[in-house]
Image (cartoon, rainbow, N blue to C red; front, side):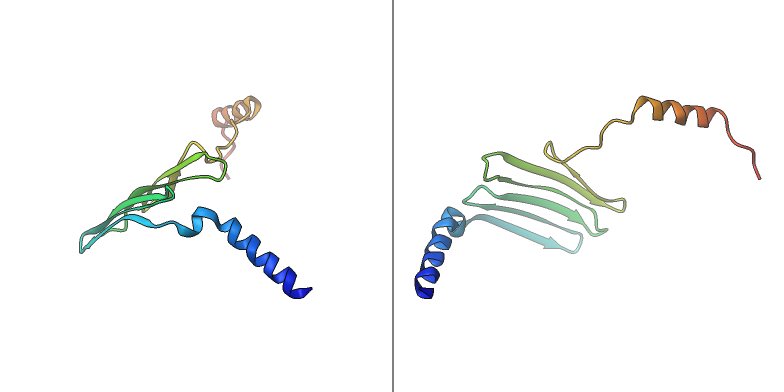
Length: 116
């Protein structure tokens, strides 16, 4: 019985892997110099990445893929002395600040407290 379960699990695993297991690199271009780097990468299952950077640690680029739901996901980014700054239509954004909070902040700004 154990062998039957093991073989069934193995067949299910292989069947679930699908085309992702057989993805091939279509393009890989890497250039590293003393003053920076640049690379481009693409696979047969529509994964792409591209980036460039300088000797100061600054970099910008993007990566993209097709999700299992068929949605094209693309993330662009900049990384510099201020940190990592991704941008994408699919990244969550904070909700707007409520009007009563903005009003309270404006009141506090226009009525400074006493200095100690």
